[in-house]
Image (cartoon, rainbow, N blue to C red; front, side, top):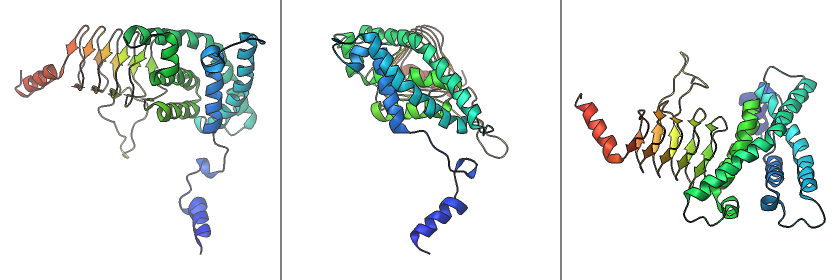
Length: 296
């Protein structure tokens, strides 16, 4: 048996990993990138579209962008629903559900744009090196990460979870920032520098929060079923309240709460909640750990 035959046997018989064992059209990363480019241009025409609008109005340009993006998004959402709705095999039902999701997503675009503007302004306020909002939009990798996350989260909440995960992965590949689309993030959010930031699925972040590079908002442990499979969807990531700053390299794990107005220092390892207006440094966490060991 030659290698082609053996690969077919692996694919079709011994190691078949297809959903329900069937060949299906998968969502396309290339098409999703095109959709994202058009959505960015529709929301911010002069930043991601074209610099000057001489012979056509901005509204016409935005309309054209959406007319290109939304039908492509519809098809990608429909493909993803084969996996998001595993018990549904009716093509018409999948299309109707996809149409509902894309319609709801489209209706949210003005609100998404408004929240994104608050993010850009927070970045401008929070970075003394920033000289304009245009610089924030065009040059900051954290900007692309949060734009894509706002799109992905809206689709995730509507039920297009595979598409949302693909968008998050596209963002991670482009920026080095890994935000699960399930994470809930309030307005005026700023990731400074950004590389290595990880935000888990059930994290909840309030308003006016700033993160620096290599911050992790992760899970401390994973509960398992009797058969050893991990329990899915349990709240296991931190809650970050309003007006919190988390400096570079901090690792915050588990379903704990960082109180409003707190500051978490660089390289801190934190697995317990802290009250509002706390100032946590490495020295303080080491002191707390030592007191715990001493039984105080």
